[in-house]
Length: 282
Image (cartoon, rainbow, N blue to C red; front, side):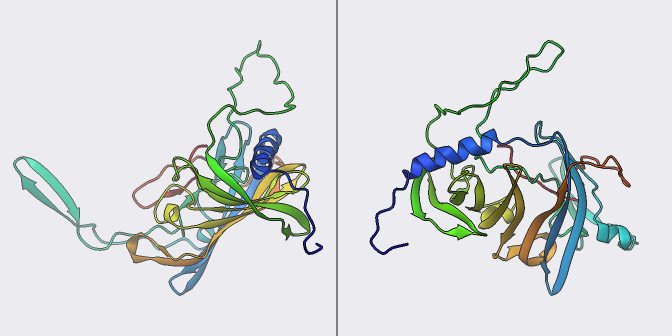
């Protein structure tokens, strides 16, 4: 870049609108299979969990095998003894308080019910197409116009290159609902406007994950964005006195299904010892 040279750059909010339209226009296969890898430093132990998963990006359904490859290879010991609790009564009401330290989940952050096509609010919401024998096929999207009020104030920071791709680097300041509108910085391709990187103020749906910043890296395949990894440099103070650092969630081996499955994929439910790692609906 020549010092002092004027750049013919689009206005920042125009870049933002182009990015939202590009993400909304992106198309995905009816089903994709992938592996979710969750890793981090659990106290002083390096922990890595791999989960098999599958999703339909078009209707949002997904399934996961709720036992990681590592746990399947080496199941945790079966606990012995009794779980004690104390019940106290006051005016006919009873409170049951467990005694002792509860068992922690074998999963680092919980069973990940996550999709690599999640868009962090970039995708415009569309009216649901009715399903039925008489339903008309969806029309191709040519352009997208939003009449909703703005969620962010947008500024252009710079134009860096990421992995060989020229990008626009945007700063996003939420104008309302900052907990829902979590984007704070966004890097989009200068030619296709698809996201390459994003900084969000919080991630997922549970504390402390929602209270710390996360960096999101995207890859593009077949003109559609996929999350490649989500990472945070913040220390996570979890339940059961667990401290987790250097947390990374990666989506690997993304592919169309082969039709061969060696284990059942289900939609797991949270239990007393199992939590789910999920994203809010957007």
